Structure formats: C-alpha cells, structure tokens
Length: 69
Image (cartoon, rainbow, N blue to C red; front, side, top):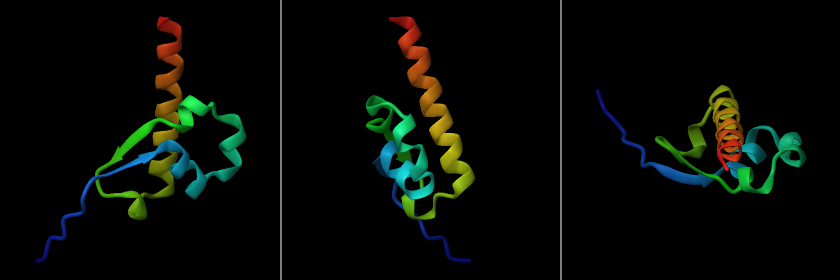
C-alpha cells in the first residue's frame, strides 16, 4: 500500500466559493471572503459538501464575533 501525503494549503474563503458556489459571492461580506482557511489536503481535492460546510462555518464564525463587539 502506498500513501501519498498531501501538503496543507491555505486559501481564502473566496477561492472555495468561486470554485463551488460562485453565485454566492454577492451575498458574502468582504471580511468573510478574505477569511483564511487551512485545508488539510488542498483545494484540488476538496469536495462540494465539504466546501459548503466550510462556508457555513465561516459565516457563523463571523456572525458570532460580530455579536461579541
């Protein structure tokens, strides 16, 4: 058995949105789109379901931090 280790990749949320859900771009705030996301195995193998989960989590994180200020 051969294991190929992918390197972690840091991308902006906007890259994930553009790849999977470009229609969502106008609905996200700039600070959300600029969020840095670390992908364990890189953007090239990110699946659509995982991309949506990352987007949802990022939006929730920005909303909860806005409430704390």
